[in-house]
Length: 277
Image 1 (cartoon, rainbow, N blue to C red):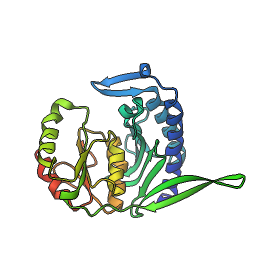
Image 2 (cartoon, rainbow, N blue to C red; image 1 turned 180 degrees about the horizontal axis):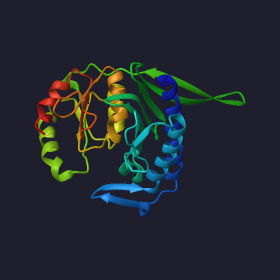
Image 3 (cartoon, one colour; image 1 turned 120 degrees about the vertical axis):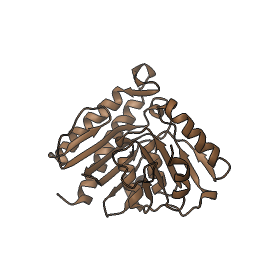
């Protein structure tokens, strides 16, 4: 396989291209273009168009790889490498014009996540990591210099916070499976509300994970989510020296539907409530 860093940078460019498409479509978007996959679980032509674009570009980067995609436009059999793609994470946020929403792309080899890229479209922030290479945030700032407009790129290395549970900012999301998850989220909020710094719900699993990696959140927990929701962000957290497990506390979370991600300091505190969920 080619250099992981080189491929990661190509994936960042693909994520940004998909993000530009999504940003453009959002400007003329209306709610009558939304479909319901399940109760409170939405999809639009924008999700599907973004996925087709991403799959097409990724096939050029690694033709031998298979795909796991949220909208099912491509599949996999026994390929050594598999792309895991969420073409628009935070669709409910997107259709309401409420940030954040993102493109999420991961490359897996067996039980290993090799590359993770998450592009937050509204803030124009690209989070990325490759296995063993650390986690980074790419920010592009436009600066006007005389008559030329130059695009200045900053790459900041990410590292999780060191906050303890008493000061922690937690993200406890609300997945679509409300009947099954309502008792769990009720228990989590009852346990942590008033015992931690504060609690937030932001509507994008991929971005919640990246915010843990960047130290903006100290921990995140959610269940009943897909691999496309968390795979890229999980690697970014781990490469930022954070911890990721499933709700039971197992480090092998890649085929499940639950994720606990943290700065490591508060991880066991989170597992107290998630282990029996």
